[in-house]
Image (cartoon, rainbow, N blue to C red; front, top):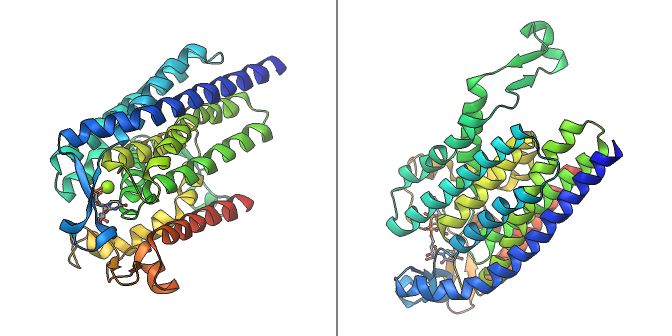
Length: 353
Ligand code: UD1
Ligand code: MG
């Protein structure tokens, strides 16, 4: 028993080590890749800086591609050092990597081709296929005690419906991060905070349990979430206000898919949704515009006031606008910090419960 515990710790430490190497490589590669994407005209206007799109600053786009590639290299190589692996886990681990890789490809396609909104929505369900097809874990849910007499079962096997749920989770995680965006640092910032919450949750669950399979499920989440956290921090150092690079849908889709996969393989997707509470809120606020009941412009960004240099809220249904209307005009940087503090507070609050 102690031997297994020791090997689990060793694997987690090695994963931390390769993640740090991943961080250093990402920090080095982003400026290099920035030159290349600009040369191919892959840039975005920093809309919140000078008011009008054409008066704004050109910023290299889609630097999430660097994060994605470094993440894949790190997580693929890590398998060589994982001492607790059994073959079933390796199958799911590689299927997860295939889904993440597929998502990076489709995200990059979206950045380059700018596909319509409705197509964007379904891309993650295509990318999730490798994991859904290879998934051999449980497909059961436990019926809450008070409902048992009515359902007549204590455990319900959902079968393929559970896989449908996994696919929908992937669609939600990716898109909800992508639409909680538009101010410098927010896309990566929220990912960093959720990834931290997931990491702490996993470590606590491993410490609290004596069930080996349960520990391994959470350890496998850690092997994916540590490299995500490390490479994202590297990206944040460039994307933080004032952004010298943009992350692109390559990054938002990659990050969302990785967290969905981590929640599925770690068997804590309900807890994951709690960590996504601000994204759920932003999604609900966005529903009228996403459903087409209220017109939805290409960008739902706050308004920049050139005189004060502050942002004001518009009528678009986003959490960013809600915060601006609720707490008054703010600078882009302080608004981003406020939203991230909110995200962190929610994560903390729920994990205390
Ligand atoms: C989503 C949002 C959109 C928002 C956009 C901003 C929905 C349905 N879609 O679209 O409302 O405007 O994200 O990312 O809610 N940009 C900035 N400053 C930033 C980040 C982005 O000006 O800090 C601008 C840049 O011009 C950048 C562009 O947004 O090139 C990126 O937009 P993209 O990620 O392609 O937008 P969507 O994800 O389609
Ligand atoms: Mg986007």
